[in-house]
Image (cartoon, rainbow, N blue to C red):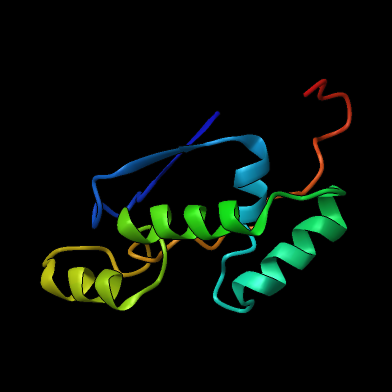
Length: 104
């Protein structure tokens, strides 16, 4: 399991996700629709995860203010002293296959 959190402090929430869900979450950078994320996860991971689970993951991340959304931007605007460089939602490259030698 992996814990996703907002390093900028805008959100205090932590969302625990599996390795597979982490890899799918890495695709949630705003450039793809949920249907495209599902298709890409199937392409990269084989079976991927069901579309409904991707919807649930996106909902959980948005609720926790870990995705760029109107709620996230409103919270960021309302926070003083937040480092704008760190006050960005989840958008990080994560390899979709384990590193060489990783047994998981």
